[in-house]
Length: 309
Length: 258
Image 1 (cartoon, rainbow over the protein chains, first blue to last red):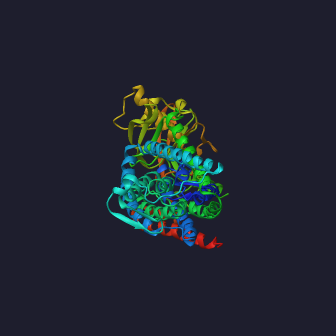
Image 2: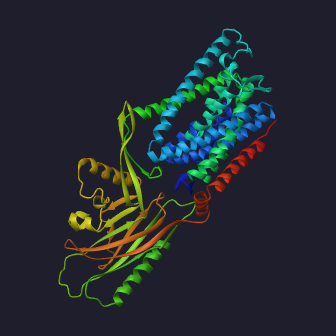
Image 3: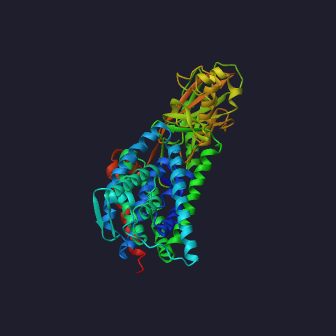
């Protein structure tokens, strides 16, 4: 069934978009990531203008993160204090990100920056996660116990000022790295139309040593806050949020996310991380291939504001 | 069915109109099947019928056939055409040309291939045909391969998007002095005011021209959403966020199993 999108100004197959939303929602519930890093490229590939795809996915991430977060909240797997600090930093970051987004659109280099960012961050994060989780899985198979978490081991981070105690995560760390991580995710999130969960989750685990049990729920809260503000800013600055597109994606996404979250609760954390790492790497490689192979069409059209035509 | 009824009425109307008026030179009467195209949520493109009647010059002894060209132009827009080049192994946008005031939609239908109707200079004067579009003062007369490549790419991309079209034999003559042409308006057709121009040719000379206007606009919900998003982005954004939170919460409640 075709439905006309008022902002994207073209008709799309409603069930196709719904299916994409549901599939990505399932993965987002499973891994505790927003799924934007899959959805944005999928939408662009199916002919939605990149600016509309990025901005509408932002709204979709809010919905799917919120529904997934409810399930973590009921199981008390959220550190609200840590999430609060991350949201504040994330909101600042996403304001910067939306400004950069607007400037890049005008210069015609938005697609390039999006691709380069995807390749860099997905490659780095995916590679790091994969080696780490594979090692853990192999260790577990050989019967070696996983290394115990020793709260004192933070090295240089321990010497940073403005320390804060996060009871739920059993952490006593400086807010500086938390703010830096939150703001960085905010910039990337609004720039790339992604929640940034696939970067935030490993960053919280490896840099801040947040326990894996609360990391997903906490990162979901950060994504809701940051992406809600990013949606507002995209709507106000770039007028590129398509409400109809976002709604179809949301409904598909939240339904998929429910099933994903349930399956995720049953699978082991290490296995989940290895699977997510493979997915992240695959998307990164796809973008790299696009950047280096000779395109079929060298020319492209855009308005002065940067909307693809 | 409705389109056919429209066609019959319009054809009858133009016939009556031209029979009623005595004339010396050739005259053209032109009508379009609608003057307002509405885009609703189920819009997947539509077709516009253009009708007309030729009132021959009574004093003329020239028996050569009339040729008719129908041009439909959408609202003007300024577009940037960019070309990718390989830099350090990566393909990125480098050179760019800005073409101002180009038609966002351009469809030309003719009773024969354009090259058989008139010479290039004549066609260029009236901007008839994809190869005769006016690319603005900056590009006029500059036919270096570099500039030509950008202009050709612009037209090709527009053609690929279904927004530029050239149809030889797209104009038919149901009667000796009555012509008809169907113009397909694709689903991605830009909104705004459109101009239908009809040109009458004989022996390679443009005898007369006439036109009709119509508009394409979003209707109802689509119009409301679009206007709100453009004029009141923050309110629209707030609605989108509220919608997202509501959808997420609803799903969380509906699917709750614990």
